[in-house]
Length: 124
Image 1: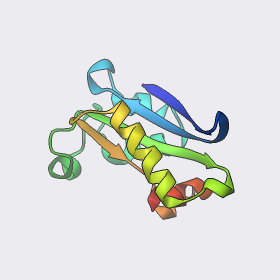
Image 2 (image 1 turned 90 degrees about the horizontal axis):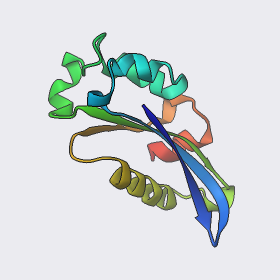
Image 3 (image 1 turned 120 degrees about the horizontal axis):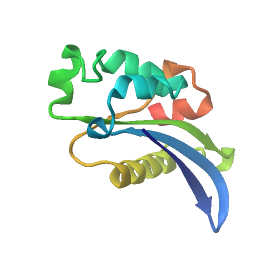
Image 4 (image 1 turned 30 degrees about the horizontal axis):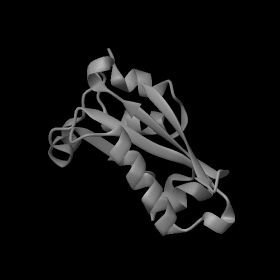
């Protein structure tokens, strides 16, 4: 498990941050257990997406296709002046591009995830 804290800056001034948890299936004995240890949203994702052995559950196999790893994006904090869905989309796209390849399932919170104001922007 790798937890990435991404700083969002404008002219060398930090205006926000984004947390991403990257679970690499081949580097973990049990991806589900490792993600559950992270608490909060990654733990919820682990119980819904992965079976006891850390593999994607049958319900998600067709949806996910050949994914073997997972990237959970959450924990968005952003100053109000920059809390725009287009800015968030650009940041999230850059994070996904940097931290994944074709074999990742990327998970973002839904608006009803109750993770704070940042999750509503991520859901958009």
